[in-house]
Length: 116
Length: 115
Image 1 (tube, rainbow over the protein chains, first blue to last red):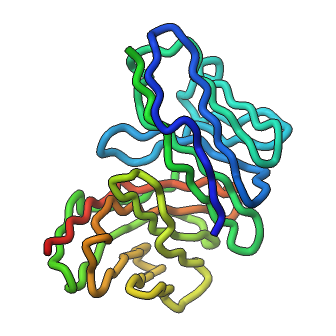
Image 2: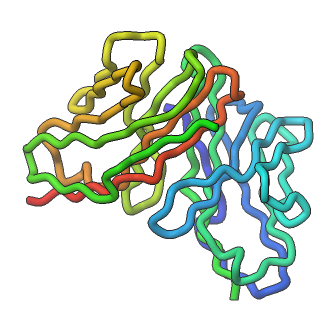
């Protein structure tokens, strides 16, 4: 099946620093990728939709200057949490859309971000 | 707005038994897809089963099957012959055909499988 790699799996950073998370589709091209945030024991909240070669579409309430998304190629999207603060600590998950008849999203394994 | 509701925060089942997880959704659209995803302790989201709204036949994948009631906007997941590896958080999700693949998730049901 389709594989989505997300890196790093866990990152700890100091308050005020920026952190970049990568999401790669390993065996297919993904024109569309998605970024989710998940708090403990809660559901996935869509943050933004990332389209290759164009600006990301952010969900209401998500700060685009805080969460920078770049989708420069058909296999890579990045999420940069800028000037991270403890309240940004969360689990971030990406997914990539495998286009076609089934049009299914495949998910990365997630990144746990801890901001000290 | 489209919503997905899972009314059972937690469920448990004995190994080898059958369990049904509930999901209801609200939409005024007629063309959409429904999914069940599994999130084990590793937190990797895994697609369990999908259902196209235009298909009347319920989807099945080995031990997993759904009961899709379009008029009632209900989409329950039945797990037969439950195994220890089935223990996970299960999320019901909905996608409009016109939404550009945007998924809306329910709150999740934590399934425990007892040996």
